[in-house]
Image (cartoon, rainbow, N blue to C red; front, side, top):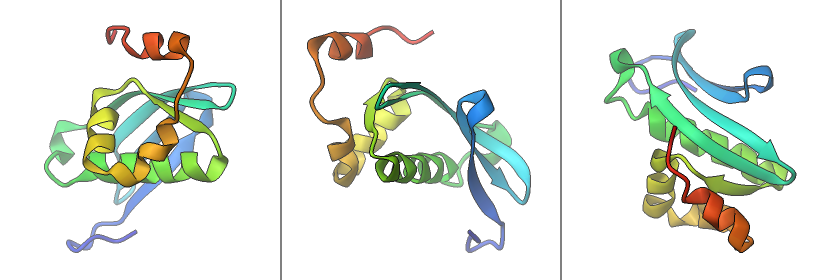
Length: 113
């Protein structure tokens, strides 16, 4: 996708690394690490390189990732604080985090590493 500033922004999954990456004009600008547990996509960590911050890239990365999670039919477990914030600010994606068992809810409360 092209941005207003002419930059080409792309989001791609790198399954071998269990992450989605966002690039700007071919340069890696950020990532979203994940795990898959059965039919659950677990969003672990999102980061954007400091040189690319302030451009809305984290939001673009999370939105594209969640669109792909939705298309896959998986449920979402948001352990990443940024993804949890995104879900609060964009309630249209909340359906991805359907009710889960108490065990998986407890796992969400584990501290970040």
